[in-house]
Image (cartoon, rainbow, N blue to C red; front, side):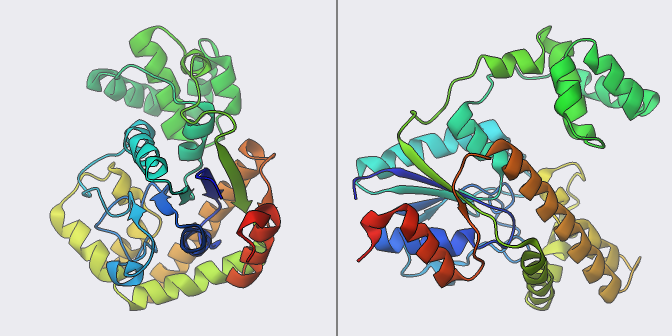
Length: 310
């Protein structure tokens, strides 16, 4: 198989890491992580990031555990790190396998990333104050006056993206939608193949529940304790990782472990639903793998890539 770029997307616990590792072994490729939380070295267990021991003897993996919890990686920063890595892998004559659950990373690679100017801190602070004062409905109505497309497409309750759309216009005088329209794909058309893992929702939920139980038993609480001890700002991305707030409530004595685990499991299921909805809408044309078990997923993958069949 000639060197190419494979994009493997899917919700949490759908089997992306295992499929990517299998493809890397079979093709001589290298894996580039596309998960916004697996970037952080502080959360190996809670993000299900493969450990160094698990990766021993595997194909090279990149952009996993490379960031400190005090850093705030954006989509742009990830793209600036991933683009040269992909080029280097291809230059070595190997396929680059980009795998993860952060849909915006894939969108940036295949659709482009808006080169939005930096928003001053005072503009962000003012936007947050305005949102609190106006409430979501009135804030969204105000946004519709300058960026109707963003106001229409941003989901209910998504304060972060509503504020982002407003502050970009406030700081630059150009709507976020217009900035996004000026973009070009990072990856050249025709240079990549794609697949989405979309196993049955009920089975995926059950796997998520079981995996969280395992995480709690194998170090997730210690990871959250270490984050709390650092006194990090609550708005940092790592502090918003699924499970951190719920386990922190238990560590602080606000809830017992059983309730914290149940809350984390519930939030994980909600996150999986949001991921699945995003992938269904934004990647509707990507081929699907519907199996959940690794061997069945590999068989479905081979049907897409027969050149790998022994």
